[in-house]
Length: 270
Image 1 (cartoon, rainbow, N blue to C red):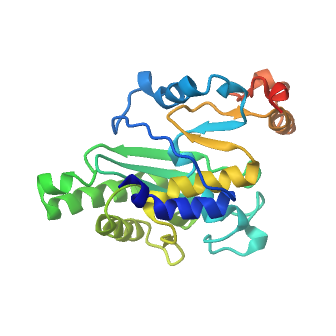
Image 2 (cartoon, rainbow, N blue to C red):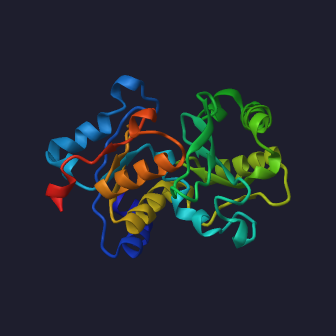
């Protein structure tokens, strides 16, 4: 059953990676507290004791949700290519992680220099998951989700940004097709601009996997989906990061809070 269910994803990843992917599954509660957010990493390390010496990027799934859409190439942003750079206007992506047990809203920024999508704002809707539709009825559920998304966009995002800064809407997760379609309409109405579009070229259940595959192809490193917020950099990436911090006016790397750590044993693992 599992083999047939992931057949389309396998075909897509094989095309992206150039070889057939290997899968590993880890089943965890829908909502994790901070004490067990490293469960994914610890489970993998049992089988791969030298994991710290491998070129792997750790990150929560939402960090990969924007990677597969070619935003960094200027697509789907409805802007001229000469504005798709650090000197151009800000570009924000409304990302909605839609699961059976929750709805998580993120406002992501396109960072052209670092080629990543940092989170500007986020909000967790514990009672907006699809399963609550049956509990409270379709009409009440629609109103609950609409209020959640509308409040996130209009009362949080627009406190620090302009409406036109939001250039695209991405939905990811395992919610049903009908529920995703409804959420897309709700989100589009909340943003309410002529340029913003709900992207649907990739199945919502494959958005994270597709983004991780694209990231791995671009950077030549595997992407591991986990709750750990640490980012391990290669020596070259770490040096580039320090250089960028110095250009921004930091006297030394110690001046920067929450700086990433270089990947241990990288030179030995080449």
